[in-house]
Amino acid sequence: MSHTMTALSAALPLASGWSVHSLWMRRRIETARRDPLTGLWTREPFEERARKSLTRWSQRAVLVLDLDRFKAINDTLGHAAGDAVIRETGQRLGRWAEEHAGVAGRLGGDEFAALIPGYGIDKLRVDLFMLTGRLGQMVPFEGCSIEVSASIGAAYYRTGNGDLSTLLRRADEQMYRAKQRGGGWRIAHRLSVPEVGTVNGRRDGRRGTSGVAA
Image 1 (cartoon, rainbow, N blue to C red):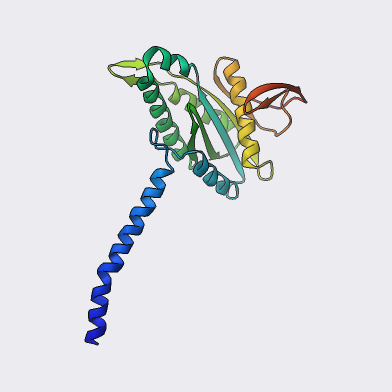
Image 2: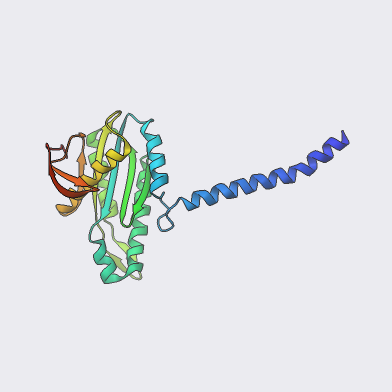
């Protein structure tokens, strides 16, 4: 009995050490999958989590957003100011997504995405109006304030209406249309072919039937 207790006592610190090491490794891995500037998920882990969420919600909305006139901020105020705008935008979007039980990520540059459960197209309109206002608040930087705005595209859908890649593309198309019209947001709530074909949210000149957007 004494030998057993002695062996157990010797094993406990080792087991505890492995537990701490495993926790440290998990945190290191998670940190590596986070965007260091905003704290949001990078593209691959965002898409992994978004795809899992598709199986749990009967109605959902996929969002893609892009900052307006971001190049001008970098060119006139410098990259540090641009980083401040990216950081604040990502954090604002991340908090908004958490409040809506969703997930958000930074796709790269000044482009972001989010997935939230949907509770009807009218509520989504209100949510996008609120998000636009939140993202449009001034960003403080070195004693001054930077004016910021974003163009947002959303694909609202029900179960079986498409995979994540398709929905991100639809949302990106609507984002680009919103940007062409000076910003704000647009919603695609039917997965039909858009009026002007796009590739990665950009025109390619192909025409099809009209897509439905709000």
